Amino acid sequence: MKYAIGIDVGGTSVKLGFVSVEGEVAEAWEIPTRTEDGGKEILPDIAASVKKRIAEKGMADDIVGAGIGLPGPVDDEGVIRKAVNLHWDRIFNVADELSELLGGMKVKAGNDANVAALGEYWQGAGKDYGDMVMVTLGTGIGGGIIHHGQIFAGTTGAGGEIGHLCLNPYEKIRCNCGNAGCFEQYASATGIVRLTREELEASDEDSLLRDTEITAKAMWDAVKAGDALAIRVADRFGFYLGWGLSVIAGVVNPEVFVLGGGVSQAGDIILPFVRKNFEEHAFHACRDAQIVIATLGNGAGTLGAAKMVIN
Amino acid sequence: MKYAIGIDVGGTSVKLGFVSVEGEVAEAWEIPTRTEDGGKEILPDIAASVKKRIAEKGMADDIVGAGIGLPGPVDDEGVIRKAVNLHWDRIFNVADELSELLGGMKVKAGNDANVAALGEYWQGAGKDYGDMVMVTLGTGIGGGIIHHGQIFAGTTGAGGEIGHLCLNPYEKIRCNCGNAGCFEQYASATGIVRLTREELEASDEDSLLRDTEITAKAMWDAVKAGDALAIRVADRFGFYLGWGLSVIAGVVNPEVFVLGGGVSQAGDIILPFVRKNFEEHAFHACRDAQIVIATLGNGAGTLGAAKMVIN
Image (cartoon, rainbow over all chains, first blue to last red; front, side, top):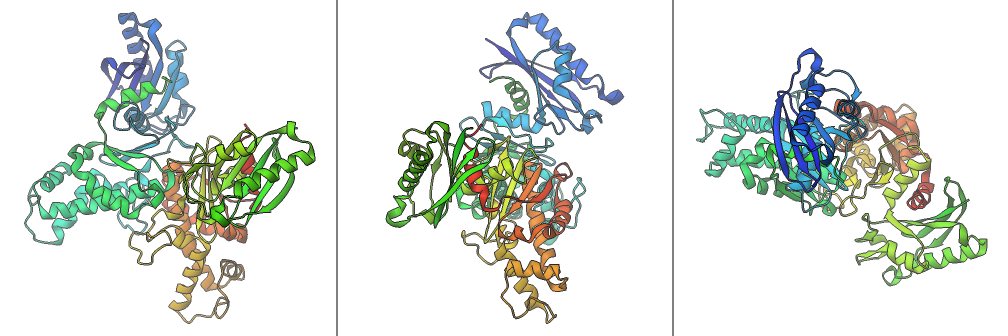
């Protein structure tokens, strides 16, 4: 059996794994992400750890290459422009640099959200579909487009970075990106907290969400308990997410949307709220797209990274 | 020199041409589109005309294949689902059927807007760029995405059919598609007429656009003449088009937008109105996309159709 090395770089740790060409994770480990000194040790640390592990396992002849997912925009060539969380501020070809550190091994690099999308497409919720859009609902909204089985990176590596498409140009509150009215201001975990606060302030209505810490999880738990105010928040969240997905469908016409990230852990309960609004706003030719919940969790990154070098 | 046959099928006529592999149109002609009897003669008519012309010119050995653009959604395999203007109501593989009529010639089929986009990408305004989105501003809005030099058809052939992405879910007036708030309700020629009427009704202000037939052309002529009311209409049009393009950029991150169709014939005067609003709403990573005017006009369809079978 042949294996690829999947590498998923985060701001505090790097997840690594040997992934068989059939999609089984044979060995998984982590190392810390050393961001000091402009993060200059991150790639050498990864290379050293990979080489050591290959030697220990005697797998030198079984490795087809390595894929690496990074928290920043990465283009088709493997060039990263900025990675704030890694303290990287230069534009360089990550794939080439890691390949050199690994003695010329075949290396491909991608944005972490795109790489996770590829993982879900290969072994997760997108497995049985063609073109897919992954939507990661966390503090913000990340995303990735898989077209003909490949990551759609876009011109500057921002393809599928849907969190900042402007749904509401009349919004007064600024997004972290500097614009206003971004998708992630409404349909992320942060958006859920905001919508919940708005509903709580709009009335004195009794609710499980009063006088408690407001989180996306608490909101969905209240929906599950039948809380009327929480159901109104879920309706508004579903409106924004369903509308946003309909816009994306109008551009890239995918067969499936896969919802991942913290918010998606509430499970299938979120789907009817999204589906109803998606169908109301989607163009008829795009309306059959499925909307499903991601299945791989944090493992998607390592799998997708490995898949980049597996044909 | 080798040639491909480019075929651009419209509701009243079919444009055909021999296009060299270097992009020169060597011979161009038209035949009527016979839509009677469910349009069953359309493909046989095209095949007969092509075979006759090849024989006349003695070019049988010089033809690499034929590409055909059609007014309806066509997927990657060449399957068309519906073409109202051709009176076709069956789902079938156009590429296979035309190939058979042409004695096994290599044939590819695409949606007409996507095919025109490929033409502009190959020989027109998109020539010097990578990933491109074509936006055709006519009675409605059509579009096409070119990714890695290829048409991005989408799952049901509706990729890049951006006219019906919902910009305004609060809109009360219905679009022809049955939804409300579609991009083309604001940023098409029809949208310009609508925005002009709204401005005229909102005040008694003097304007070149009063007591005359309102068309997109008249509106841009009035802008060129410095008409204050027309400039306000152009501002509102620019807001919707710039905002809409920013949304598309947030999904597919193209290097260039090419604006075609009747409205684009006003020329570069429309660009500042669009650019300003695009930059205000686009995510910073996508903001460098260029916005330019198409250069090929009606010729884009034949060229793009031919290009589908030229590598």
